[in-house]
Image (cartoon, rainbow, N blue to C red; front, side, top):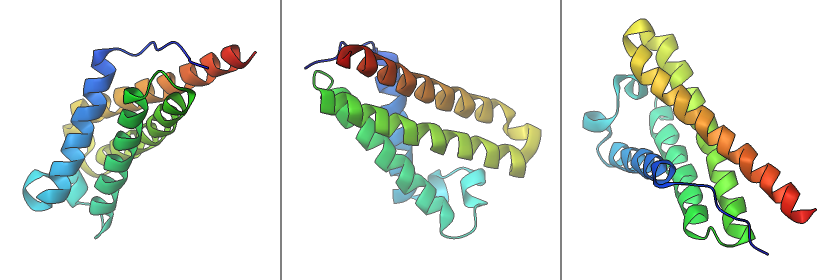
Length: 131
């Protein structure tokens, strides 16, 4: 059974870019990570980036295997995690940095909302496909 894909290159590139940021942040935390992440208590900034990298990897694996039910479920799981990570990052940024982080946090909120929205779309499409 296959589920028709509604994703587009924008979604794929946003997930890939955030995953690349998480990877670079883990490799060079002190120079790449934002002041928000460096403000996390040790080692939570690293843990946050690792969770972000894992969720992006799971979502991208699902996107690559889009023509299968497992692929779509992997994508939904990754996007659900990504929504949580993005929301937590944005809330922490606003809480610690305030208005100075507003533009970046709005982008993170939008990314989290888009990931959650796509996860809901997948759930609805799956229910329709299963009857």
